[in-house]
Length: 305
Length: 308
Image (cartoon, each protein chain N blue to C red):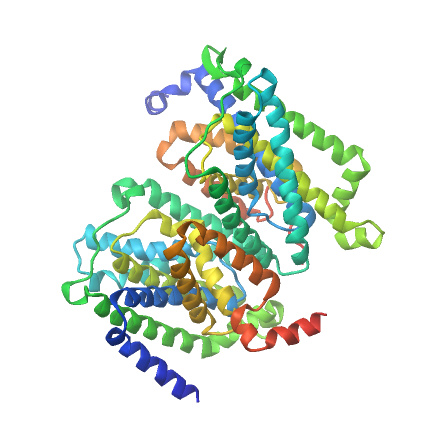
């Protein structure tokens, strides 16, 4: 026991552990917002959208511009938070209708390559519109400080995401299991051809799902903007993390995304505490192990042959 | 006819240093390296039907293997370079065992995951790899230092590697690999060990990717973790796609077009290069399913006719 306490002095510090769990949870909630959209889009359209991180980045940059543009009143931030994801959703709609729609019938690898091309295009456009300098967004006054939790300081802005993301999750669950549209989406993930044969307009459904997924990416980016430096590299950082979450949870699985986002968030926050040097390697190692043992993820379904 | 064309190309490559300024020799050197990397990649994609999204890992393993032997063990370049393909092949063997068990999308994703592991290890292991700062000051020996000398050296090594790859493709192993690509189940029924063939192709591909990485390390004079980043993995993919997946020399043609375009655009508008590359990739995927070589061969049209 002595050996353990010397190695990990924080292990007897209950409040530190709790605060790590809390910050891991908030990281996980950001990850959930981004990855559930990616997972949903894959579930219905079977396209792994590598440009999902780019949409997230555009959401963050739109947040920067909107907060600057809107009057400096208390509601300016909240209105921006409402509008930025809608802007990203529109962008997603344009991309789906103009490009993705043409390649659904093609080899999945061609789809991956196309969305990779999109990463390059979007990152250059962002550079041209917003310039190369890092940007930042101020937190709204009410959430600018920190609260005391378990005797430790915890930034109060993170409470926002801790509340908002589960709300989104519950809302999505309600939509999926209590509405006709949600039923169509669930049906599409199981058998698209059959759904089409039953007279459902599958093409329109794809567009709607892609727009919704892009909205989620934009919401994640807009929410994250006040917590990070809004910079050009954030697309690939987010993509890689969301990718891990989606793969571990199972492509196309809603509950899988949530569980694996929490898992990855907490793992990351403790990984930094225990093995600061290799915490990211740890993440990919977990992903590799999951892919080896259960390629379809914790809650996903095996590939159809 | 083909022999005449080949002779003409060899003669042109040999005479290039007499006619071209050093800058273009460097461009040609880069093209040769990119062509080798893409041809190694295409052994998997074109012949084996396996698309790796993490091939930068093997390129980087090769580059770092050579760089570390020069910097940490004090070996001369000509002894350090052979380590590049060997270490990359070893990496490909270790990862490949797991990767080839999966198919299509999942194959691509696991290869990407392993690629990111290699990237993070290089990035984080500062004491060995220098992390973000990379390893600088890797130069070939005096007699290879001039652009013309290194150009001859690279083109010779790449030509030998391509001959080897061609022989592999034309061997019974190559035919078996194509059979596995076309129909894994039938291949298994006629007695081909599918996974073993896929793993061997993966290791061979890793071997030559590592050689390309080693050649690039001494061309560039330095190595950086970016070599292993997932965006770098798309380079051979794009090059192969541009050149045409179905042909052995497609990736070489693609590398030529890719590097030339990169140079033309980066020279005047470096900011626009990713925009142009991204747009070209999107356009090729949507409009030319078989790449530019496929277009030249007219196969695209028969294919389009069949689909329509």
